[in-house]
Image (tube, rainbow, N blue to C red; front, side, top):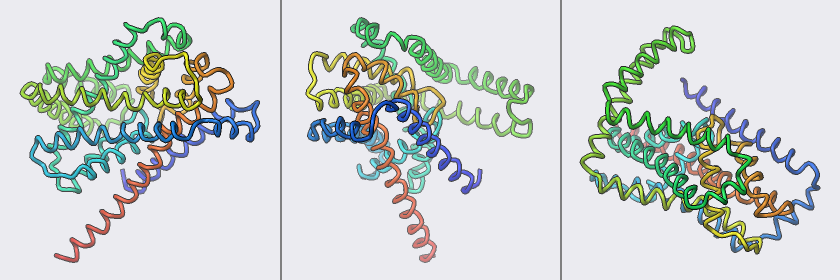
Length: 352
């Protein structure tokens, strides 16, 4: 894919996110006037909202801590702020691509620009992926077991979407485990799948070899990751703990918005449970940023907690902090990194 085509694809994805969001908001607020919406938004305590923004940024910084920690273990000297750059770039591209597939390749690209070996960046991204998905499922199972009544009361209408989310996540994790435990089996299965898809014309026959090579490369990479994990269980355990804290920072934003409106009666534990369940339901869906579906799930799950009057402005603030704020900062960081890379390449070219 050429650079122009790639940029065009990202621009179209961003446009799709905003179109879906605008249509969703128009549907949600069709019976309300703009001054009324602004009044409800302004009634939230700005200090709590600032706390929510800080929690959202801490969520991104949490991944930076993990990247920095792993680079230090791999004896790669890199500043924390450079790792923060990788995280914002990663989340920006994850938010604008279906099923968050675009983030890690761009992180690895920028790590390579900073002279970090591709083997190291691949290993780091692999372990982060495993921890990120596994922690979500473990949190969801734990919170559902100990707080099932809350899920049944407030998220009962989402039950089939929750089941689908669990199924997609578990399939993904199962495939990861297969590659880890039996990499040769996984490689053979992947090659057979490519062959079948080629016969069914789902993928073009001329691209069959390219996809086969990609399957082999992925399996070899995961086998390397499996070997590292077996030899460094203590490191991986710490990464799982850090990932759990990272994800809780993001899930806690809805509770912060709840407190911003001076509400009480629902515990932090209950709100966290619902937000985790929503994440399970929407994260694996092939929509950039899970736009539209995230807003719908929020309204269904939190109407009984915020009330009919405040649930809509709460949605705007919560989604604004957890998605659009990160998207905006990520876009700025990505643009700045691109400009710096261009200047660096020009400087190196002039020095030759």
